[in-house]
Image 1 (cartoon, helix red, strand yellow):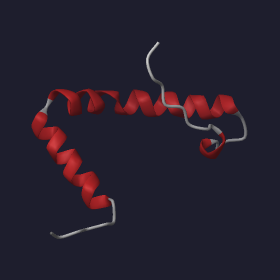
Image 2 (tube, rainbow, N blue to C red; image 1 turned 30 degrees about the vertical axis):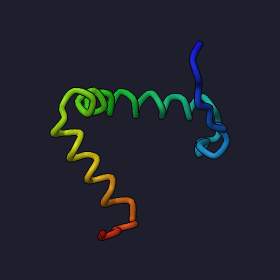
Image 3 (cartoon, rainbow, N blue to C red; image 1 turned 90 degrees about the horizontal axis):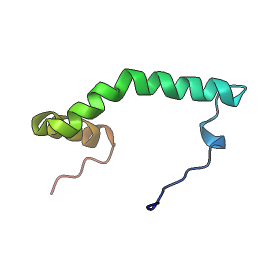
Image 4 (spheres, rainbow, N blue to C red; image 1 turned 90 degrees about the vertical axis):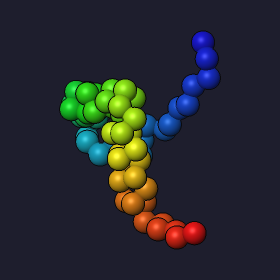
Length: 63
């Protein structure tokens, strides 16, 4: 098996039980999977999303 990145679960638990957390994760996956696939397949969409994320980052450096 290859390298794996693991994050602690506790900071992401905003619900009272882990089952609710995983239900929320599956809802997010269901909602966003088509967009994630599009990011991978469409270079123009990727560029737009990347620019949007960069602008949301809060560090607007002008070189």
